[in-house]
Image 1: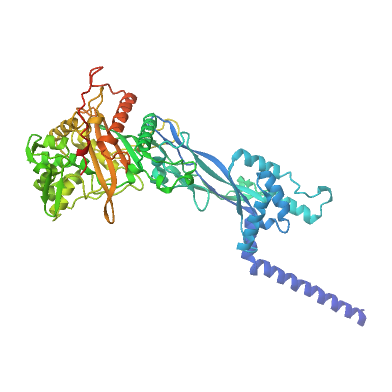
Image 2: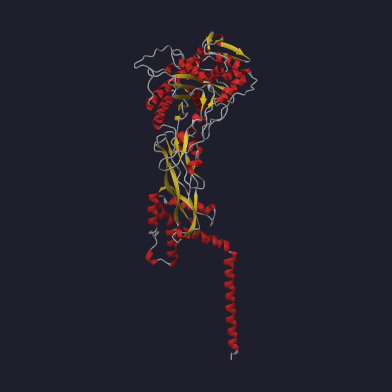
Length: 615
């Protein structure tokens, strides 16, 4: 039988046991209910494995399979600042040595993360563009690091810290970098791709990298699983796995050796003419394929920050300029097509000055009555202003639109300029007359080249081609695009007459006389347009252009060359005609186009007639 004292101790023991159970219950309630979400998230952080599977960005090739842009895998290294605790200096010393970084740089990064969000900061990036082999060496060495702690005398707390540093302090995410085997060649067409703000995959910023971003990038996959204490995935515990879908390569129509030659010739001409810039285009007249697209000045796509952003854009597509006298090609096409004139029809050029409405048109030489053939060769603004009046706004506007002016070019290219055409109901006689010789309308150089291809192709317009999507891997199978029938712009007879007139331009007495070659017969049209801004035309600022055909009678190539604000002469017949000739001869050599003149044929030249192509 229990005595009174024993009852007292039994009561205290029961009370203590009850208090323990109450405390245990409260603790369990806090863990399972009150802090459930917090602790579950903390547990998932160390046990769950979630990884985005990034497809490698695909390649861009030239027409012959030469790799212009490739992707190389690399790593981005991150550090968990929460694991540093008060030992930031110790951690920074070891990590700096492994990653070849300054310990002070790592310390500053950790302290900055703590200031941004005290106690709540996540991982921070401490090094980008780490080669895969280098990261493998770092991660292997990290597992053996002591971080300056004496391993034989470690306390339990220090031992736990060391294990956490070795397994979870540093990790790396997959990334990639674009490399350019041929340096800055074709840079403005290719464009650049940079890491996204979220990291990981590259995103196109300009050029074809932006135009075909989704095609090159593919579609990411995802892997959800569990990981062990060392952060290694446990494949047997996978709950979700969706593989990445690879993108497609781009095979361009560009011929790299020809591209290199055109770039060098353009760069030398821009320098010698002291121009602000320039561009050159070579197209296949039968297939409407771009064989070369050059712009100057350009930039290094591997280090784009070293050049002004204005150099990143491709002037062949992005520039929007008045075509000047080059537009007479299409006004002549309209006059011939509508049966208003023939090449031998006469027109009175008013002895060099003609008032129409509120403007006075001038030619650079006093011409009387001439044929339209001669007016084209001498680039008479008055002759073509009168032809524009005969045509009227509706017919001239329709012809310009059928050649592709007044809207975006049909070829896919991010940032391509939308041209400015002529309204079919334009009430102003002055604007109609000016549009007939290339003022008051605007096009890109690429649009001019495409339109000239329609003339060279017998008057039919096809869809221009710069890039084709191809399946990556063996065989490089091309993905067929929807077929498109050529549409007729002008009759074949009209196209032949225009080519006949162009052949006389690149002959003695023509504005492109300096483009003459002893080996080839060229057809060409020059244009020197004055540049404008919001205040009107700028004195002394010109855009000089030539479009030509090789060979003249049955063109295989269409070539455009242009200089932006040249300082050493500005008439197209002087500054760009020699560039056209050099490009044409180099292209003929590269593509195996045989000369159409007898060997050793001499070219008789008259005094250059270069002042007749300016509006």
